[in-house]
Length: 158
Image 1 (tube, rainbow, N blue to C red):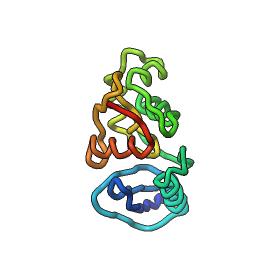
Image 2 (tube, rainbow, N blue to C red):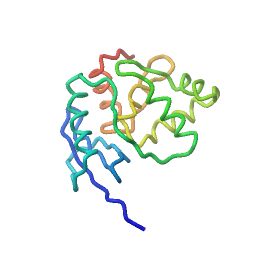
Image 3 (cartoon, one colour):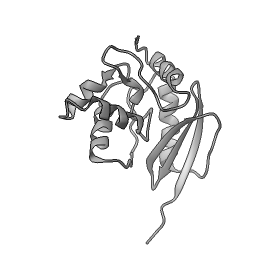
Image 4 (cartoon, rainbow, N blue to C red):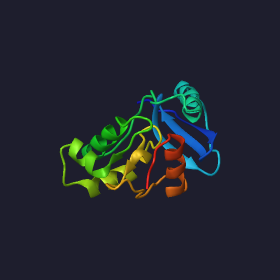
């Protein structure tokens, strides 16, 4: 049995460092952190660097990177629904619940959004409360980071 090589690269951004971790040429996590943490290199991380640069310049509406995320079937359905939300648009927790066929599960959707291992690539910052309010963000500096990401995409919020 062969071991998978894990590589990690940090990229500076207006939101702090964005650290992307890859295993076997697939992205497994994204973290918004205060300091850089790079180990090894890989083609997928080079591709991620190029796409992040374009995103930060406002020239990349959708990331095209291979992901390998682990979660429950419910979490995977939520993350798949979030991934469909385009740059500059938002969706509510309730709308996601309806989209995945669980209209009464808005709170559970919130928990799945908070557990998203690849924020930014799967734009959980685009998920708002039903009134358009900011309800939380687990990456970086929380709501402050969410506001910066929404502002970057030209999204209005309450």
